[in-house]
Length: 519
Image (tube, rainbow, N blue to C red; front, side, top):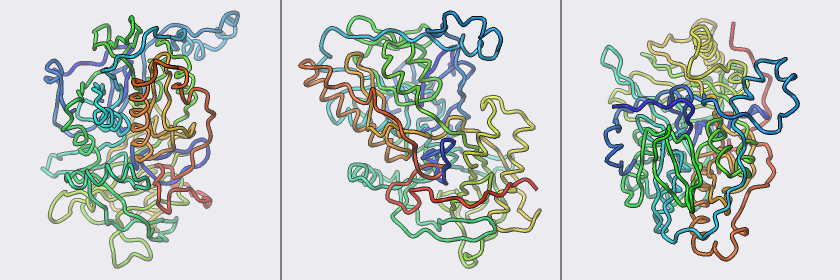
């Protein structure tokens, strides 16, 4: 029986990659990083081994629902005394104030961490899973908590759809592909290739400018999951011996008890742990951290800014027309320039094993960050009019990008929009991980280093090694093991759908004037 997400709880799982403007930019959201799962109102949180109690919740459907961002009501924020009258003048601000929990005082454990620690990892995207894998290599057990009803992955999201006519549609509707530049990540990717979980994508990918002008990108290898990005996440920890995965679980509270952390979901204990890793972000992470007793970690997480991106999944009976310069070959993927509604378009059919005749033609379109911000709505309750507007304008944007006459864009027989409300990081502290040695709470995630699947993996590795070193030497001087707690932030550069390290498209170039997609 599926367990409903309790009101007021939060937890995490979820890289795209066209270009990113300034602070409304989105980064490796869809080209390399975590899947967003639907959570009931007020919820927020990552299987190799499912515990007996959780095994009944496991599902195999690859349908990936939308991820909600709502959280429950909490205590009032501190530092607001004497301004009641001002808040009363603005009911909206007062409601927001009441939902923000108070920030608890610093927790300081009095005794050293257990030499055989149990680590809780909240979030089952690339960063959290690589952290668990690395901890296992270091002989440390972990439990990954994730909100996913249908699988792990975070922004590594794949949706399988069966139409009423019996057609199978597959869409990578978050991370489109990823690149490799760091030897440590390369080692992981090589292993996944040998295990049959990852392959090099040989597709025709380039830059598509408004009017249909295509320029192919000739650079390093691009990688994808053989059966989609989400199945890669499930594969990553499928052989784990020291890794337990519990899902769907929405950790609503972490509380210091004695010399350990007590985790709970709506008052039901999920166990005690020696350290906690936060491998997700956004409002849910903020609400979880504020009352936890790790105020410095909360402060850094609170500084993170995230963009919003619309994804449009569309299936066509016929191939889309090729742009100028590609008449003899089919387009597989393109970073779109000069069109307000579109930043990326990718052909899932050409990279995933859908059928022998490679039909129907399943495309994923991503909006620009600016379009996402302008059209942002509560993603768990998208108004019908907004949904129709987004579908219409994004398909018109694709028409402009391909240089087609107005009204000549092929009509898809299946189309579905999805809003990633907390898509990609706009700013970053530029550190591999964050760790509060006194509270034994750490953060890993792509946003700490940039916006890519590689950044997510490297961050997970870094935090795992740091925890192991803290276990071995932290009792000598815990203070020296606190890192990233006061590091400043800078803007993230790259495409609207993320960064691709080692690729010629890893940096955003100056954008031409955007053309509105609505006719």
